[in-house]
Image (tube, rainbow, N blue to C red; front, top):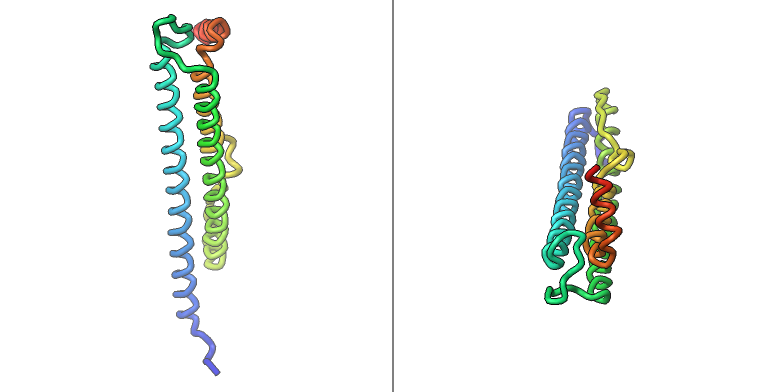
Length: 161
């Protein structure tokens, strides 16, 4: 039968667990940032590409200009939506795993009577997922703008006032 662990051994074990949980917490936060940055970069590129392909924002293309068809718009729009959904799934999964690590860090610090505030990212009013949704909407609008030039011009005029 093994002897009971010494207090110093328990404290060292807690420190090891705390360090692992803290490293996991930081890894998950960094991974969320990378997914967010990668996704928004691609979505902003879609917005710029749509504007470049159609000439000007909110201007219907001239007959001589290269323009994408409604089918191509649906394919591009579908790809944008799939990209955004993929990012949302992985950001949420990393938030869930971050939350587990965060709870473990807080629990271990409480044992040592150390209080710390580590906010839950899901409780923030706006975060990575919400921004991805907004940029996705912008990308879809940029892709659709040439199909609705009057509405687009009205929106630009409204925003300019």
